[in-house]
Image 1 (spheres, one colour):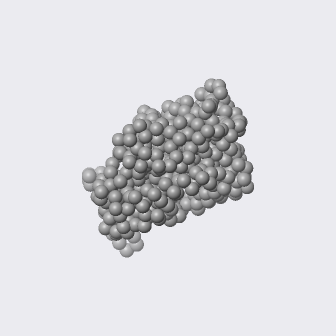
Image 2 (cartoon, rainbow, N blue to C red):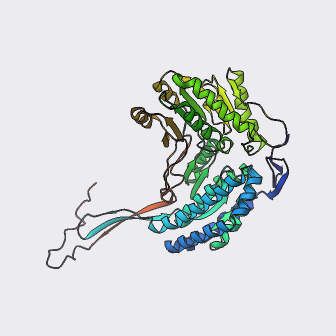
Image 3 (cartoon, rainbow, N blue to C red):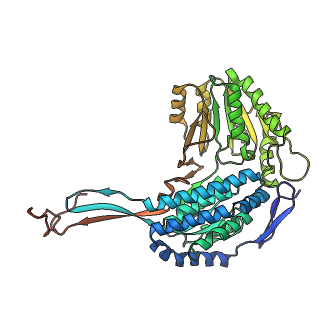
Length: 481
């Protein structure tokens, strides 16, 4: 079967619907000259955009949110056709993008520096300045919401942006650019379509000041290595292998429901999906039985959307097949279904070991691999192992165990008694091979700016009325180290 995302020629991307295999459309791949022209145009536009008052930039980003809201139905339908995401979830992703743009329209004008007070006639403060030209490399699994976060933060802080959406959803990315770009002055926001070759070419350009990447850890590592030579700042939120630790004192049915939500939502194609499960032996039998039923009901009712393409499905099934060869047991799912598209069933794997790729690597599919542990401490030790550091979830009724997990898990986000959720305006810093820097939230504008430190002092001859001149540093004096 052909992959449901493929390049039919060196200069063209053709996308197939992952539900039916029907052609969605074809788009040109940016050539080296297109990359150079886009970066040159963004560079030329940046000083004028940076000179625009922050409140003015915020107003335009709010206008962009309105333009996106007006195109929501169209973009959601296109997203569904390109990636297989259910229409309602795709529409929710557009709404999240609108909300995110509105958030940065408000945060930009109040983005502020720090001040220090030394002498009464002196002041020290910092001024945040845009880095310059930002290249934004965004994923396919929530393409509009993620892109809007990076676009909003980059533009409101005075950077110009060149956006390259994933080659798995280039039509969504192109249309998003067509909706948002006209709101801003020319060349403030540009879009390039293409695959990994275009992304690699972008990372080699010394004219780029900051890269923001949301996607695989392998791609993120390549970007970080390339930036060593170009000097660009890198923000990256990359893959994860998020554990779920289930303690002995929780309701096994509720815990299984949480595990199913974490493993099967968006067909497991969420960066913070549950990728590996450690359950206490005391409740393992009940938990596993309930988790199998959660998966079985989803499969029976056809509730899972397809994976983004057959290439992704093949990668998921390789992990599953390898685990079965090494002794795991598929209690539900685990086989590639017949028929068109890129569907894969909700799968529960029991008797897993940590040497299996399905436990050690990011699978990014609707797979729930389970290992039974003899104690909370053993489960915590296993959950803390590995090269990723995105997020982790602990289900426990023990405050002591929750605090142990918070202290021990080397991840950017620890979730206690809920696989998803969090307060509005949240953010996180991933660890290890999951990335670096704040990839979203109120801290993201800090990533897109650099700080100028200013020290202002009065000349020695000037003093306050009725006071002697303030002492100052004379040429004969040495400043403190």
